Length: 297
Image 1 (cartoon, rainbow, N blue to C red):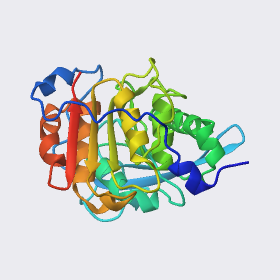
Image 2 (cartoon, rainbow, N blue to C red):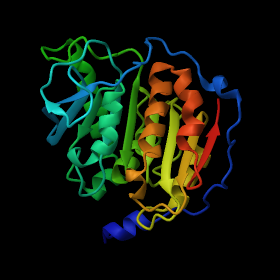
Image 3 (tube, rainbow, N blue to C red):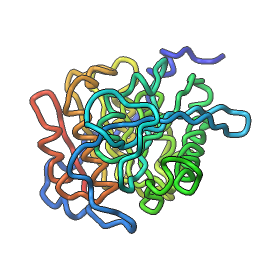
Image 4 (spheres, rainbow, N blue to C red):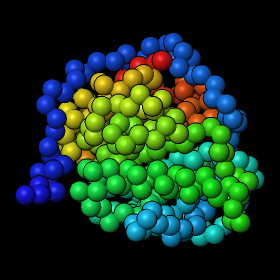
């Protein structure tokens, strides 16, 4: 019999790893290896544009909204089909959670795009079986492939996508599980930076993925077990980090500016090699309401 949504999400794996890891150690630069193809991180924010793509993977529809740096005044809502800003930008996917959408996930999508990332964001009518059997992780891999291909297509994003640096992935709840799946049971070796949020562990880390991984979770989450994310973090090879919102629930940190600020700087470090962003991470994340852990390379 299929598990209920609540039972499935609450199910946590036994033997959660101890809360270990190095906290605020100074050899940050030990994990700041240069990746071929990196360019300097943008120093000023962009306006944000969005385009819709009605892609498929076999018989599966994978409608995707691609957000990107656009010309115009920064701030405000994403503008449909806005002109692309000058420059070449890396990809950082975001996958929403249950009963949500890209449009309801702008709390993170907009800051990522404004900071200089192309953000493919699929719209999933989530099927729990397809999360657990890897179909939706494979869907995201296909979306990454299709987005990279826009760089040489007859498309406004052509020539604006960094196809050599690798890709980033992020997601919340079921989207976080899909993200963790891409690092573990259904690996995508192109991933060099990742951010699973409020996620359940989906398997042991794959030896084919070499990514900097930032977990974000509230320690009072009653929807997805904090201990399962802790186990995933404990098993993940360095460099890695964990931002805990003390007393935080499944979504309470969405309104806390420490969340997007930390994730964006994590992405800037992983995709642009931005050591200034790396060194900002402790101040980005730390407060009386958070716990920041970082394990360098």
